[in-house]
Length: 215
Image (cartoon, rainbow, N blue to C red; front, side, top):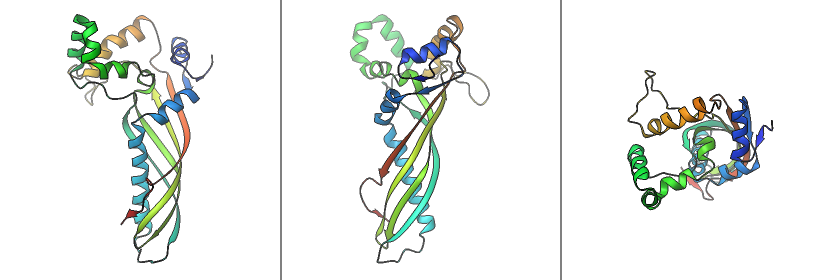
C-alpha cells in the first residue's frame, strides 16, 4: 500500500486497509501552503521571532545595524483547513438541505464550498508545528528578518464526535451532530480505521511581511 498519498482516493484506500500512517505528498502540501489559514500560522512565526529578538536585543540604542541569528519553535492549535463554512447551526443546515437540496446550494454556498475542498476531508482541524531559524538586523529604529522553517502536522483521520474534558459528547456542537452520523457510517458500518495518522511536513522561507518592525 502506497503510504505517500496525493489524492483522497489513495488516502481512502489506506483507511480501508487499516494502515497506521500516511504521508501527504506534493499535491496536498501545495494545497496546505496555499490555504488561507496558513496566513495565521505564518503570523505566529513572525510574532514568535519578534518576541525572541526583543528578549535578546533588549539593549538596542545602536544607530548602526546589528545582526542576530536565532532559533524558534512553536505550534498553532485549532487550524481549520478548507475554508470557512456558513455559521448557521449545522443541524439547521442539514435539515434545510434535506428538504431543499437545490436551494441549499445557494443559501449555504460557503458550507458546500468547504465540503468540496480536499483538505476538509484530510486534515480539517489540526495543530501545525514549526521549527527553524531566522537572521535579523536591528538598530534603535526597529528590526527586520528572514526566516526558514520546517512546518509539520500529525493528525488522526477520525470522523467521530469529540468528547469534552468530562468525556461526554456535546450534541449541541455542530461538528458532533454531523460526525455522529458520518462517523458511524464511515468507521463502524464500512469498517474504516479511526487510528490512521496523517503526516505532513514541508519547508518554507519568509520575511517579516517586508517591513521594518518598530520597537
